[in-house]
Figure 1 (cartoon, rainbow, N blue to C red):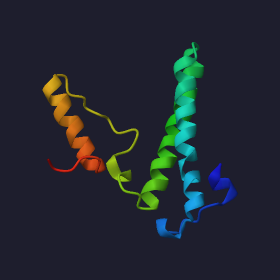
Figure 2: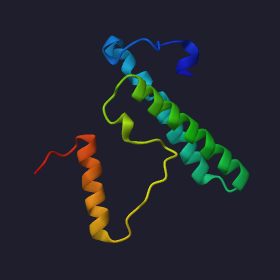
Figure 3: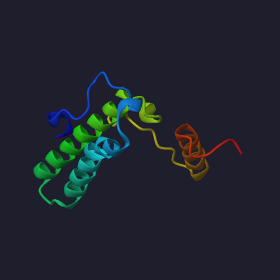
Figure 4: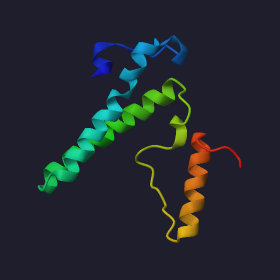
Length: 109
């Protein structure tokens, strides 16, 4: 959608994009949210899988754009990376704290 219009150039840096245009970088992310919501409310498995595939495409496009412009936190992994989730509560807590620190939400306390 944004790519078709040519709003952003591949040889631009994040600093080159006007503040008023930054919100358009988020469009693929919001499109992935809409397709995810559609996929969770559809009863037909084939249609549900199709909606979730579209959500994944939009999410990968968003992360690719963020990585291209050097937006912090974009290199946290691909949407298709397999995530290993801890099973015990202490391990979950440690994993969440580590993720927050990687994103810069929490400082060292």
